[in-house]
Image (tube, rainbow, N blue to C red):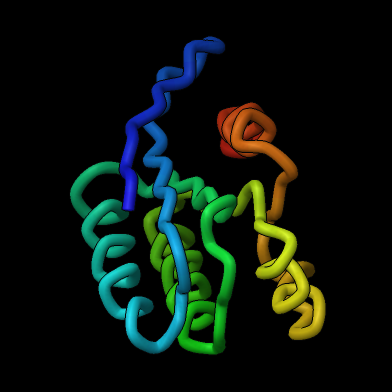
Length: 121
């Protein structure tokens, strides 16, 4: 899983972690992903973007890990966004109606773009 730090430069110096898991986000990998999310949110920054372009399958364990990460970020007054959802995984978000729960963006750039403005309120 790739982890990068992005710092916005639009008047609000804000650090954002971009996590890019690969393969499946399921019962065998969700716990590791969940631990990584917790570590990033508590130790680095509560602002997270999850790039799912390389995740071909998501099950209920994966969705649970994502929801837990979103809750952790909310508790820290952070932001939690998902982007670039692979078409095969997108169906899971739509069928479970989780696409209405998460902030989901077409591209990573779009997900990173509005974070400071949404925090200014």
